[in-house]
Image 1 (cartoon, each protein chain N blue to C red):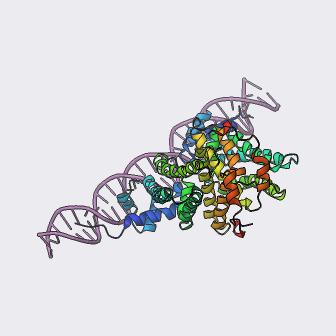
Image 2 (tube, chains in turn red, cyan, brown, purple; image 1 turned 135 degrees about the vertical axis):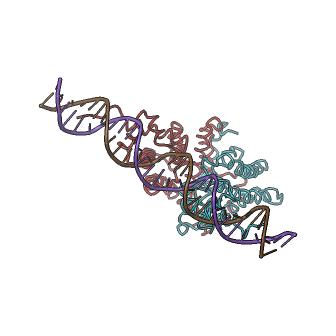
Image 3 (cartoon, rainbow over the protein chains, first blue to last red; image 1 turned 45 degrees about the vertical axis):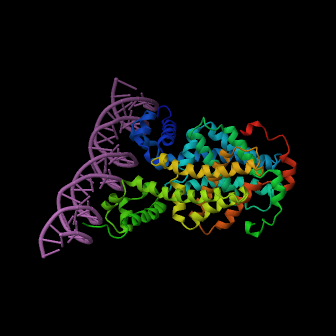
Length: 212
Length: 212
DNA sequence: AGCAATAATGAATTATGGTTCATTATTCAT
DNA sequence: ATGAATAATGAACCATAATTCATTATTGCT
């Protein structure tokens, strides 16, 4: 009997993360992934069903990690929803700050139709947890009741995704901590400064049409 | 001498928009585009250099249209920056509300590495105009001076992109007008309601680190 | 009508790269 | 040490689909 040597499964996955991040899924070759992992191209198929399967596995890792951390945060009753929002954003940023390649893949392959269905399962778990926080804040009277938080969660998600992509593409250009703080501030306070806020927010702009 | 009949160039482009939107760029076949346009597959190459060129042409149309409209809005001195923000968001939503296929392509192929460089030229023109509005609002004291508007513009861009995608994917699920209003509100006022705002916004949370 | 000149065709070519599988290598139990 | 069992290989296979180009069709001109 023969036992598998080393950890080829993980090697291949790590290699795929690098290759997908650099070339994008569709321009990545199995042969390149195998080469970088130090295995023969055929060996890839001992560990993964096919190319799609590798990508899906990468995403599963990303989202399972994020969701389980978020779950702990959400469940903690000692933290206010406001701080939970901050924590949630930190969670996402930390994930990708330490792993730029994942950030790139996260962004560019997020919509890949080949893995769409399975991927949505993973992501929805995360988004639902996030929406819970928003809901909680609303119920405690901390967040405005005028917003539809199903929409807001997606807006925030998309905004973060895009910023992470820009950052991952050109790390030197915008410090991640700056991005992080700006996002937190925008979400909480908006862009109007206090004076303008007094002037405008009380107008009859909030109506049923906001969808609540 | 022979003159080209009909408008095959436009037919091919329209057909490509439909096909790319349905299958995604990489899973779209030239033969399918040609078939839908009612021409032979070889004819596509009379009008476009190659497949990439078609995609690029679609994006050029999207962004040139958006930018020239935005330019008019930005140049209008009678409109307050606050209303310009609203107008800008309306611009983007209107563009895609009337053209779901474009919305899908906009979202899914935005990061396609094959056209990355040229595409960025088009988009930056639009983003720079948007940033001008934010800057103008800041200078007039309407928008908070604590934010880095280069970051904010990208956050908003990414958020819109993602919402348009969700909407285009499942039109019935979220009415576009509801999305539009929620986004406008979040950007201006944030999610904290007024009471919370009083409580939190004056804390020493705004520091140099915001990057201004 | 006859003839350039260009448009249009679509079968054949070509390139690519995912996947398979006959072959070889390695490991472990006896 | 031997051989059964599984790991690993990578060249060959195959499917796909972008692109080309020899051929045919159409148009306007004289």
